[in-house]
View (cartoon, one colour):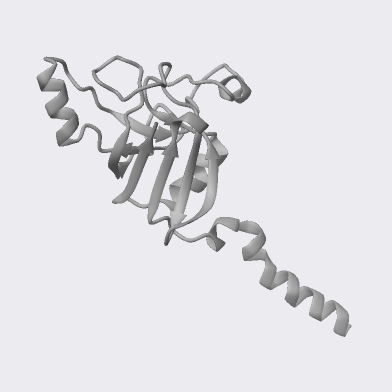
Length: 166
């Protein structure tokens, strides 16, 4: 009987660990995207603790210069709000365009665009999730799997800085 009681206690204390593995991971204090590597990293106190494979805009090389160019911006931004009602599975907004982006667009007499998010796969799609893996398919956003965005959503709070590198 003592063995069963001990086993029950061990299982009882392990349930939160098994059920919510995200609770063991810290909140990120920075997000870094390496476009050329198709990777996004969560960083806490200078240490990378989580890595996600990503998809980018259809034209991934180069900085976003204008609305509709299908490019993902490069630079330092802030994840400033989240949209649980997105047409994609969960989404977190990146505060593009910056003042520098606005000035560059004005200098070139174009609209800089906007609505850049980190999100999962499209909602209500008839395509299997594997269709979105291993290729760039967004209009300029950063996409990760639905499973990954669920974790990302809990580990990245509004106000977190993000650096998007070439």
